[in-house]
Image 1 (cartoon, rainbow, N blue to C red):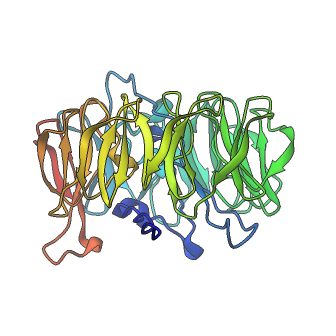
Image 2: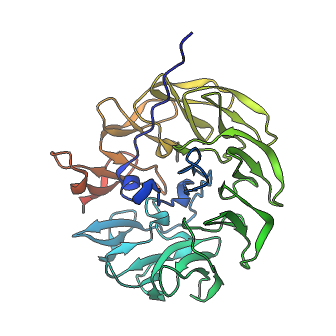
Image 3: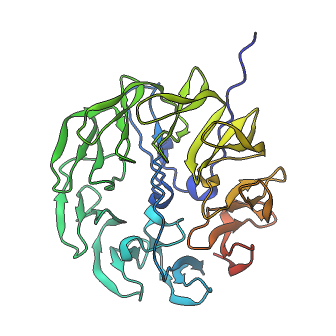
Length: 392
């Protein structure tokens, strides 16, 4: 019997590729949809390993604002498309840039020009932390990662703008706190710190992810396992570490793992509850997970049963169900939205799309030439109607 072909690498949406740096490092943090990545240089076999989180932080914001871009400046509108903060910023914190609510914990990191300092605004557009940092991510778990004086002086600030943690090392990936810990990647491995800045667990890992549902994925001797909040190995490292984007953190009690070239799901005890049988598999969200079978993507439930037949061209992490809908790529190459029966709710007419959050989703449309450099971004409601027409 011949070996099956390797699973196709999911095509990354433009806003991900736009953030890929030299050497293939994926410089993207989307906490609202549970995505993070890091690069480790331990060996060619495990270099560029990326780990995705399951943190599906649903916003309870009753007055969410959404990011827009107009004349190459960023601003924010409300759920009706009314401009609340006029486009005036050249850069915004990409930590949550593709989450519908762009003000995690009430603040947003912005820069007024391409070479200027970063600060934080509130929902009125007023600076509550003055622009004084060389770089800044958005807040998570009460702290925000910043480059203090320059890019070689990393640390964390609180919501008053006070530096509460200084990292006295060169780091390779932007960290953030989740469940009280942050993974700090240096030249000789990844260590965890607590919110006082103290190193915990008394060891480093070849690669490591943030905590989700009390466990964090770690790379030990080329294999992926899981540690608990005490730093103890909870699930023995035994799973393959791929060079492609891998959704291996826990979500809704399960994590996708690869065994002998096929993907299945384990529970928090390390028990295989859905046998490895898929070419690729993604995180569970709202009871369903996207899986790849023979080059096509469909959805399974927590028993492993197919509930939406594999027929879509892409099942990347943005295809997770959120607010009852999932963004999927159809055979025409365009993205639309389906419900949990697999029925098309929003026809495929977008070149990229994000999951819904707070009742809206971000979409992109390319010019007729197909050039991604001319892509325009808009915002739609659940009927597919624009609340903000595509602009750039």
